[in-house]
Image 1 (tube, rainbow over the protein chains, first blue to last red):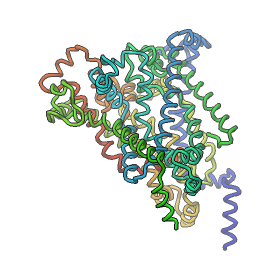
Image 2: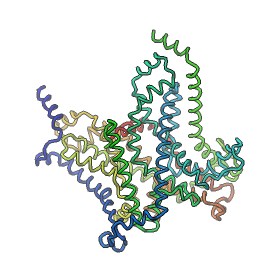
Image 3: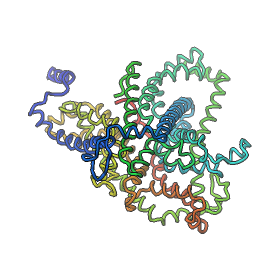
Length: 319
Length: 302
């Protein structure tokens, strides 16, 4: 009896999936039935839109449809890249993506480490609970709050004038130079506490004896952070950084759309806004799709590069 | 012995360490103030007389208390429709997404399932490649999902990320439970509903929370697909329209018209903002442990 159980367990490890036989298919018919439904759903909602990419290579006319519009090769892409606006849009997307990634990343790590140093358990819990709050607010609310805080009579101008740092209130949304920092700040404000969760979890799993040993050697707080905490969460930092690299181009839509205005258009427009404007509002589906394909392409290249770097550094693969 | 040592080390706390503690405490206080102030300020303005608020100088407490702003908001029909649709989409969207992701995770985590690798791969690919805004827009239009409520529920039902979170959790449940149930003659549906699902309550709560927050805060789909159907508007989209009408007000006649009496666009907007964030703010502190586990599972790659 015992040996049978043992043998079965062994089989389980050695050969987890059985061979495809009628008997096995019949046995698993419920699983197969549900997976078929889910696959059909996935084909419709995730794979069918990929067929729409054909539009980017056509002089797409809605009345002719996908199959009867004239094929034009790369003409749409040529047009796209000869458009000064599009080139600027790529710059904006990349710049804001990188600035946001760097800012939110560093702040989350700093916050996690410093929060971990707070001695009072209650204080730690209260601060952490408050730190999550902005993550649950929509961008609509966050940008509304920002508009208030940065308006001519808002709290920021009031503070700056009150401290005599400036004489006149600044109209922050009228100058292109403030836009990227505002977007970065908004991202930091919204996501620092949330992003810190994972680092705090990583810090908790560091072996406490390492801290004790460091204390024995006379290490102060800074030394312990530098030599124990940071090395302890380094793998987490690297993995998350690599995972987020592929999302750099996704970092730009809602906030730029909601905060942008005519005066700062040249720095606020991102690829997604461009697609929305040309594709949906102006009805130029072909150009909009081509811009979307370009974005997917760059994202995939970034992910593959990140994955290669992960492999080389001996980290586990990302996907 | 150890205690004595610790006491000694505490007493001997070095000066740099003391400075560190003071600076760190100041940092935490600044962090909390920057996080909370905007929300509390909005709350104070929403409870303050509108014309009075224009004088400025309202920080954490209302100066001239009134509930008029809230009354005005609650009389706006478009906001009420938005709230109704938002509640509906949050409920429907969360229930269907939870079921779909859970059953998919269940299937791909069965060790004996013949196509588990291909089915996993099929969904993981969707995390990295998607058709983009325009092909998706045209698809929904052709499927008749535009100008309908279901565009909020059906397209986002299965998500590879949520499925992977549940799958990772299910992988930790011992196979022996499934095996013994099978010996008792239980089918896969029974095993899923009666044996695995009850054990997965924490991870189900996590995914439900993620989906529900996303549903509650979503506005872009309402703007993109249901702009022509005011009966399917959502709370956040209505709030956005309210906010942009104020930020771009300038000297617009409508803004002046709205400013009748003691209620101003700014005060109404503050009240609407508070009402929109209220449900989530009241709920999230109690759900902390769920999203903390969820993120820690999800953060582990694949």
